[in-house]
Image (cartoon, rainbow, N blue to C red; front, side, top):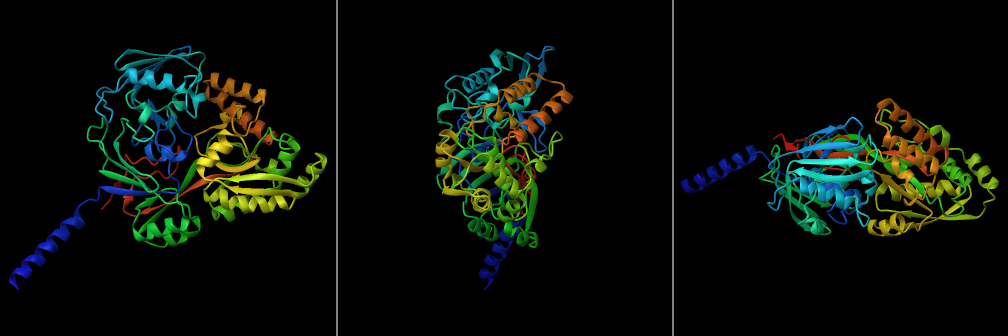
Length: 490
């Protein structure tokens, strides 16, 4: 009896101390698994969602409010003519493999990103860089061919993170960066595991370990949260169930904005979509609110151009492509188009699959039939993004302020407007904030006037987390799950 009591008391003591101990690991749910873990060698948003600010860092970075703040560069100076940027790098920074971070790594990374044979999905970010020079271990000089008012912004993208020449070729499967977390394991089809970097140059994160679990099915995502198998799902794929979480004190529902312009992209070089009247007809056939209500259960902000409504330079152009089936039918007749069937390629996210069914029904009402094909991400990237073998597709562009993609004729929707390209070139050369604002407003109007794509809605960030977690981003100024400031409150 006495021994049993002693044992029970010991168990109670251990249980009490365990309950008081601060939890230091977290499991994050994600709907999509990244195709690789190298943000400098892939276009998928899921790559950055795992490694941005966690494993890899750039010279600058995005803060949670969207501002650009110092990263591996502590300070910088810009010459009066705007052509020379001198970066002072943080001293004593180590890569996860124990090698030192120096200016030579910056030279290597930026030269690699802007090389002719680059695999960087956003090579245009580096197009204006004429040379990168290491003055000493902690000083780098970037010289530009022309002033670029967005350079510090561009360097904050995940595509611009700094990698080491020793590990660059294997980062896809074994990422080695300078960030607060070290890559530990990738069980493909299931999870990626990170551990705290004991040699991190900055403030040590509260978390000792983080697991990203990939759960593609919305019902399974709901079940995993309810069972406690995942602690947070920052981009939760089943918005129809958010009311249940809001009513449950165990959870916090975190609704914010993203940089994700969700569009019905059209292949501008494929007949009859090369006729502006057909693209305009499709735009007028779309009822945005029905798509937001049906695919996103009311979460989302209607857009009429490729620009985030929360940005101060946003122009509301939704009225220009308002739902008007009669106008859509008249435009198709004017273009001489009848018995039209278009291929609609849908990637995995629920906004695309659910939204695609709604759009197909709306297009049918104006006389356009669709052949729907459901593609996995790898197929979509190969067939649509790289192969341009599609008529219509639905995708959310989650990169920050990326209206510049419309100045790339080779981009997957193949819009080629020299006037718009000149406008973007002028924007790049402009540093004055008021002038940049005017140019951005003009850019929004040009692509709306050309009905390049069907502009649907700005993707809301609908997240669910254990109520005892703090520090998760409410908004998504870039595609990231930055865990550096995340902690358990009890």
